[in-house]
Image (cartoon, rainbow, N blue to C red; front, side, top):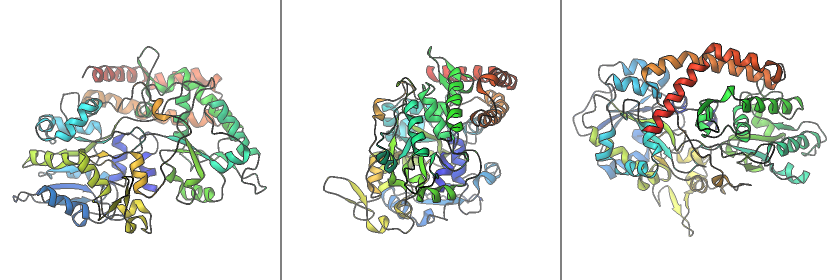
Length: 526
């Protein structure tokens, strides 16, 4: 579970999360010598702390039989530390697999000729990916750089509820039942439910130990995303909010943290915090293990995440999910889900690839239904069984694995743990059933409440990247400080708001908006 925490926390755009994943495991980071034997050389993250070497993994042995292509795997430990050294080597592997480059790096190294353009190869040799892009044009738009080239293939998920795309609020089911409450649908009801949680002893132990919204410190972002949605800031989807932009009532891109709606978000959160409905440890004092232990003692009323299993196997079934939080008037909330492109840097072919067409054909298999099945489920009779109703369920040796069924499957197939693989995810329902779980049932209708537009992370030109880098770093640092001050009541939102806005402008807000608006216009024209 901690790897999922690393992957999804905070402003989880593809570049940061891929680096977190890639920094696992062992390896030398030295590039292998090329072999002219028809094989391909792929560099991938070393995850041997929880996973067999890829050369020994059942899935890759099976795919070699299917494809007729042998892979020479090189697995790298501490990719984040070694990336610059590796990319500067005279000879590179044929391709980087599941290793993270930011959008800015893809553009930079593509323009330098280290990564080759893929758009023509995709058209000629990737029918599965072409089909996905035809069904969802935003995929191609998300992976196309400002110079018109595609330098890397995506990690995709067609299910808005799948692949860790959608945040939800998880309410303590037993507490709701004991107090005769329904899961809240708007911010007014949310406040009333949390107040009942912390004042009416729903765990029945006679102690005032119940917490309202409670997670390990630093995990305040998921709740705030839900509240932002309630106050109308989810007009372009989760990725947009995490990148600090939204579309206003005129369809123009604006900065989230300078909007009047954001002022209302922080006022609402400050009120919850003042009443003790948000744990006082929201910003410091509780680590993940302490939170999990407290959950097992039935002291957690509400948490927010993309899946219930984040709170641990012992407690996960004690919570009921809500996906839509409306504003105080009972309207406005939309599903906090992100673009179907979960990552833009899953398979990157280098200048030293001897047969780029073979590489594209090899990886394109995983964007089709057969590849999705092999990558996640494996093979019927070996790693999963098909029930009478058609459901695929992992075999007992996986379901009964000591560290859980997800890691059990990871001993056989590659695409079940961590994410950001070059393939298209199965639906969330299919995944839950495979793990031997009952799929989540929602108290609302998430797919009927999607944002009208769901934007990805924009690609920046080299010039835009240089201008945005310092502005974004400084603004994010200031916003994080301001959030703590506003929510904890150290700064009064009304009194301090104009001063806060002035500081954003001093840092470079107007230039940031100008660049992002230009990127949005370019994205819409492509």
